[in-house]
Length: 460
Image (cartoon, rainbow, N blue to C red; front, side, top):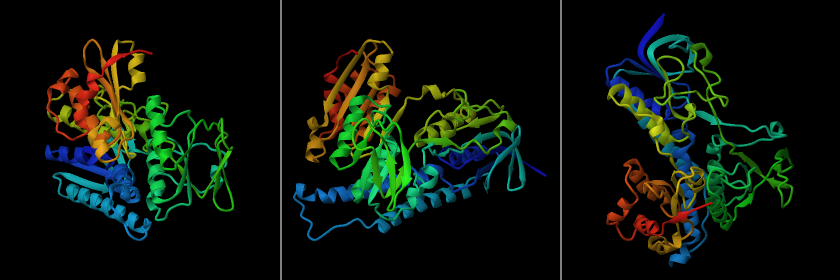
C-alpha cells in the first residue's frame, strides 16, 4: 500500500528539520526521513563537535601563555583527552536531543528512520514502505572523500568522522589536505600536545584564498609548531612498525614524513550514489552533485535539493539559506534566488579568518577599477590588549560604485567582524556608510572606518 504525503523531506541535516516543521505548520502532511542521526554533519561530526574541541584547545593554549598576562599557574597542567571528548559528546548529544524534541512536537510531521530511495517520480521506498508526495526535498549532505593514494588500502587512517571517536593525543598526526578542515584539526591537535605535519599538494594552503592570506595562516600555524609541507605532488602512504609513512616528494625537504596516525582531510563527496535518482529523472553534474536552478528545483518536477548535496554551498549557513529560499518562495510569495547570496564563510583557526565576497584575485579578474586597503591587526587596540596581534584586515571596493566587493579579516574576532561588512553588502550601500556609524571602543570592528580611510587603487 502506498502512503500519501503532501511533502517528503529526505535528510535531517541543517535545512531538513526546519523545512519539515514549516511545511507541517502550513498544514501539509510531511514525512522527514533520516537514515542516521538527526542533525546531519553539522551536529554530529562537523560544526558542533569540532568547534567544541577547538574551544578546549584554545584553553590549553591560553594556559601556556598565562604568565604573559601575569597569571601564575602553580604545578603542572595537562590535556585530559577523555574529558575533552566527553565534553564534546555531551554538547553533541544535547543538540541531537533538542532537535528530536522539536521534531516530536512539530505539527503534521512524521519522522521516519531508514534509507530512502526513489522508485519513480515523487515516489520513495523506505523500510519496505512506499511513500508518495507532491513535493520532495533532498537534503542528504555529503561524506568525507577518500583520495586515490598509493598504499591507502593497507594503512589505517582517520577522517573528520572517525576523529570524533579519538580520546587520546596522537604522538605525531600527519594530515593530508591543507584546506579548512585539515588546518582546524592541525592547530587543535598541536595545542593538545601532538606533533603535527600538514601535507598539501598545492603550492599554498587553502588555495582559494589570496596568497598573502594563505602565507599568513601558514605562519600562524608554524609559530605554534605545526610543520607544513606544500607542493606534495606524489603522495603515497605505507605502514611502518609504529605508524604510517607518507611519501610527499616535495620540491624541498625530506621525501617522506613518518607519523603515528594519519588524517585524511581531502574534501567531500555528495551522498547521491544510492538514492535511485536516475529513476526519478534527477540529473547530476560530473562531480555527483544534484543540478538545481536558482530556486533549488531539480530536473524532476516537484523535487528540490538543498544543502551540500546541490553543490551550491558547502556550509551549514548556506544550507540554512537554502531552506529560507525555498520556504519564502513556496509560502511567502517570495522570489528569492541562490545567485542573490553573497558568499561568506570562516576558517576557525585561532585567530580565525572571516571572508566575504570576492578575494582580491577574483576582484582583479573582473577588470573593473578597484580600491583596496590592508591593515595589520597590530594596529587594533583590542588586539594589542589581548596580545592577539597576528593577521590583518583587507577590503576591496568598486571604485566607481563605491560598493564593497569583498573582504578578508584574519585576526582576533575576524569571523564576527566580517559580518559587519556583509550587512553593508547585502543592503547594497556604499562603503562610506560604515564611516558614518559611531563604533564602540575598544573593539575590533571600530577599525573598519580606519581601514577604509586607507583605500588606494588596486592594480595587478
